[in-house]
Length: 281
Image 1 (cartoon, rainbow, N blue to C red):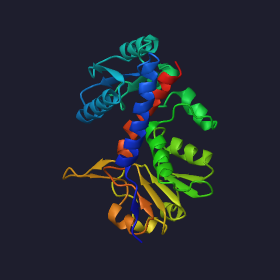
Image 2: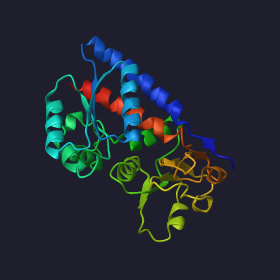
Image 3: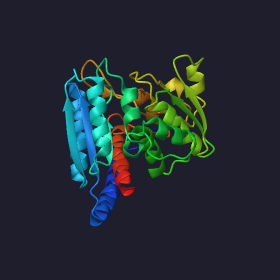
Image 4: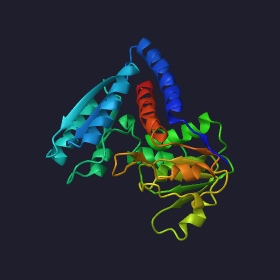
């Protein structure tokens, strides 16, 4: 078996075109969706991520305001900025680029954000709504995973899904989204006994543990759908996922590549969340 490719660039383009159309409709009503980005410190990768998000915002007809703060910024000053953005009627979405440099703590910052402007879906209120099966703003990466499965019309209901990784950003919300779509879901982590055997039960396998090429062919069921959320840079600079792509592609029915899989979907779903936030004003 040779897996068919789940092309995140194709799906992201479709999502963004839908967002563009809906943004134009909002602008006709006098509403221009606005995204505020908050970047603390000088991490080069974070700067690239934020710049890409800002560029995509502008391309889709939304406006964006960037706030770049020194790594020495205090927790109090960052909270003051968040509260000011909460009150700004021109800003519909707030994105705080994570991780924050130490000793800053992300939890109080995310909790201080208005749930109505939490376009990353990480506020406790929005996470709680997701847990209850009433999703409002869903974390962008797991939302992108679901959008890819739907775009390619891959069946979720009744399937056995295994999510490897239990982060608040990806693993837990991905598991909840799959559960709400009537999959039977197992969440694995570093303490899971006989992880390969658990993974082999999966009709849908989501790898989100942040370890390069961790998921090997012997861990994958023949015909499984494999979603690789990982982005890891090897010593030679090459980007690879959490899945041993070539070997696993020989067994899977569908698989996402890295790069070009889940990555493009994260920004696309952020744009969608920002448009939705503006739609409720």
